[in-house]
Image (cartoon, rainbow over all chains, first blue to last red; front, side, top):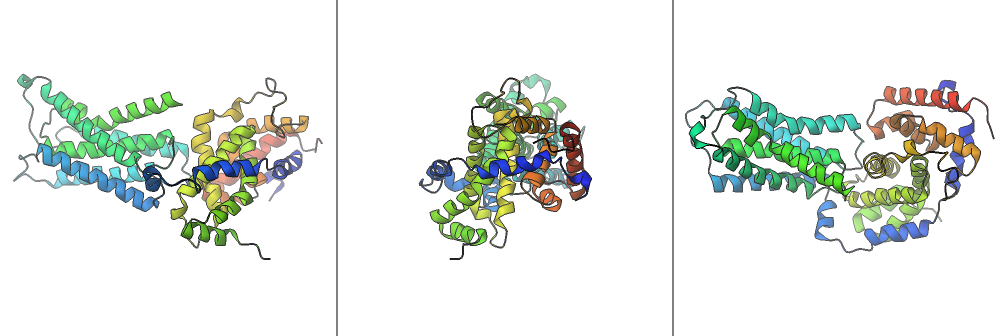
Length: 237
Length: 180
């Protein structure tokens, strides 16, 4: 180490000070043992203790099941036969890939290399914002306009169904989180992955392409769930 | 009698949930981790809570431990993440809010029990959180810059720059001489 990489000498004493006073290790161990090795694992604790790869795969698998149930109930849109689906399929694949990445961020083990806070938030915000970006691209999605005479009902109904799917898919991720009070960027990433899955599900059953419908009922789902989750988390603090 | 290595203990703990192995690892590392967190929060109760959180995550993550990995950096990476994720959120950066004038004699020994130690705490509070993190790991815990860069998720050169700047700030505040 060069002299520039050395702290002032006063820190020499300080370095040894706390190492010589461990405090009451017995009491501390009794407390942690009561929460871990001495406690029969609950179902939630069993899920948390799964290896990270298994937790992530299970969360994504559960999201797929929720998506399949949603499509089975609502039916697959029938306007896509004969159309060039290259861009449509590619877009759904992008949503799915970012969804998987965002779930991975939310479920990342604490033993893994720390992520700089700015980077972690950047990734979570990207996951939350991507559906809005996709929804805002004019002419990007194939489909048809919902006539104005139909009023607001189709928009609200679509938003409600999408929100339900997004809550389900976000919860699939949160179920496998290890922390009792996860970091806010993890909650945002979980909501982001749910929002991406929610939009993919919406696009598979709803053919509406009105710009406000796409933004409000398909693209905003992750932001809506993320906002609620972060408000609840902030309230608990 | 030969003492078991961290890795041998960890193997027993992961493979058979051996309570004794967990306890041995805890007793080996809890005091150092308490010191690590004490320098961040200056409060024994909060530091103990963070140590508990670290070992709670250590326990939950045990199936993620690769049998050929080293235990100490694995555990410290958890501690760093706990410090970043839980401590910041729950305790709202008390190390930067710690006011020596308002709390001249913290009730819980031995933190800041002398004027010199209070001076050090005050100087440390002047560092940014990322600089303080590097100083804690490098100076107080003895990790190399390379090891720190692997744990905190920053490049080797970024870690060196943080340390260099942090030590300059500390030298400017505390001076070159030993004040004791």
